[in-house]
Length: 639
Image (tube, rainbow, N blue to C red; front, side):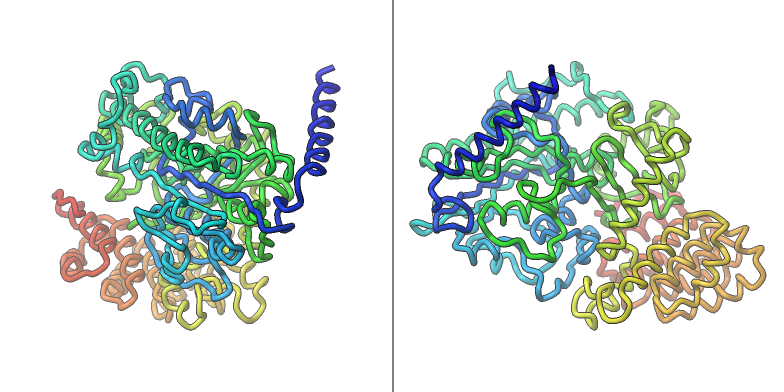
């Protein structure tokens, strides 16, 4: 009976859509005339789906709840990164950040000339496009002023020329992680909240199980909720403006967040806590008729990726979606089977991680498993929750659910069942009962990396070196030659580096590969298994030869391997040399290795101190400062 009801409802919806299409004037159908829907984007920073309409028991979000009641609530929307700038670069281009070179936090990639941010297509189609005011795209050409008709804190759809449809973006900055960490900023955002809108931290029941339950942690969690309430009021005002101007039934309103909560193991991470976002879209009746969307107030459980936003908006505007876009319209495109994500350099620390998520399971591949989850990242350490985590680690009072998070190194693979384990704390990768699912998602992830040409597999110093000649970061893996073989060799080398000692012979052979990035992963992998590598005849000589590699990244990886094998003399000398390299990312790569070597690096302590002087890259300063502090037993927090 339930199945019959479902089928009847589906048939009715399809019939209704066809009928409405017949009744709607051709002039408002995309591509059929001049009239196009307006589009209003409301974006928030650093929040997960802590909204009442998503079932959160503590959320006070009446305006977004009302938007959901009048629109469609997407339950499985995910960002391509757990941090703002890489994710936003994917949104504005419709291409994955690790395909176009915008994947490292705070970088400035050169885009290929044919790649246009999607608002340019909308402007060509007659739209007035404004952004108030966040950009953060990780590229400087084209500049924001070239992309938008107006990008400023005065930008508004009300300023459009008469008769023009608009695409207007408004971004709320108040719920950024700094709003939680900075008391003054928090109070400024909170100033208009009533007592009834404030939270009691002692009564919050949604504290993640991997956090220590302390007053300071609860205060951060409380602030997160209150900042979201302030954001909800902001969204309500913008929606009211639209209605008062009589534009509500002419405008698609889309609310979304750029990634998860700005707290540890959430922002920057690829779990649901870092990438699952709220996505609510109000479709005017004529748009729902055209695209047969869900009814107002209904949920849509399809997988959506943030890289899909660009082609979806182009579809709404009746603009042909360029074939190079890697996202797909979630209105007309083939439904997704997987949503993918990438983590690369987060400020001063590299940690290459990739993920594939289907409707129920998440697969995580750690390409640098010897690095702990809790690498010291300066910005993260400023927060009260991270300080509480550090204190609880020292006191050995962290909850059992945090066991993996605080481990000294990571597993190569992780697999989680989100239905039974929503916080992703029970890794099923070694469970034979889930071997088939593990293989399926592993294969999907590898296929995605091969398809897009994952630039995260190329060391940043190598990208810096090759980008000018290639013309763009994208072209490094998409230039002349056998592109498919190159990407396949690179992907295999990266996987092999953490695939176990069985790959040592292939890694030694890989030191002679023609592609620098393959040589890098080969040297890096040999350093992951120092005892077994040292036992191989000729390995020390091969790695010593690699110290002379023309690619800084390869030489640094070889030095790391030699130092981990106990052959420190040559390795430390090379790392000292690279600290003064003209390539800033080579300097960072060398500094990170020295920091990770701990006591082994003591003979070059003086050089590290000298490296702190007149160093233009603040990330190199942070890492060297941390390394020096550890060796000297001092504390000197660098901004």
